[in-house]
Length: 164
Image 1 (cartoon, one colour):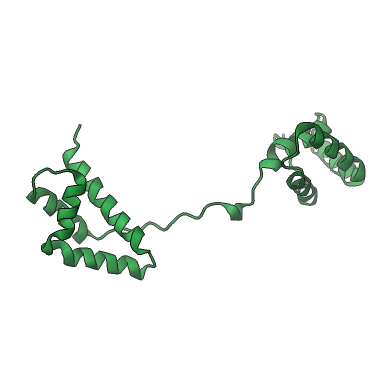
Image 2 (cartoon, one colour):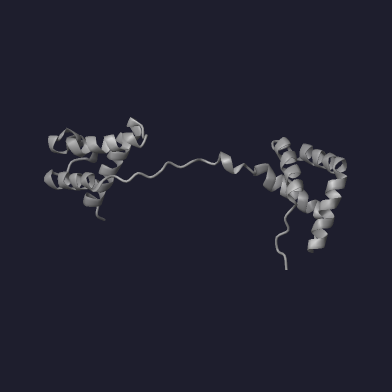
C-alpha cells in the first residue's frame, strides 16, 4: 500500500516554477493564478492526475496539488542555499593542559581578568602562538582564532569553578 503519493519529476519542476513565481502573492491572487495555470497546463495536469489515480490515490487531486503548491513548494528552497557550517577544529592537548595549569595556579578572578592574565603570562605564550599558527594554516581568520581560544578558556574556567 502506498502512503505517500509523489509527483513525477517533470510535473514537480512545473509546480516549483509556479510556486516560486507566485510565492509572495496574497491568497486571492494566488487562487486566481492557480486556476489560470491549471487551465493553461490542462494536458500535463490530467496526465499527472491519471498517474496518481493509477498509483491508488483516492482523494481530490486538485486539492492535493493546490495544497502542495501553496504550503510546501512556496516555502521550498534549494538545498544549495543552506548554510554551510564551519569545520570543527580541535585545540591541542598542550593548550588544554596550559589552561588547566593556569587555572590551578591563580586565584579565582572574573573569567575575563583570568583570561587576560593567561595571555600575559610568558609561560603560556609559546603554546598560544603555536595554536594560533596551527589555526592560521587551516585558513581560520585572526578574529575567529582569538574567539575560539577565549571561548575554550572560559569553558574550562566554568568547568572548574561553576560546579552547581
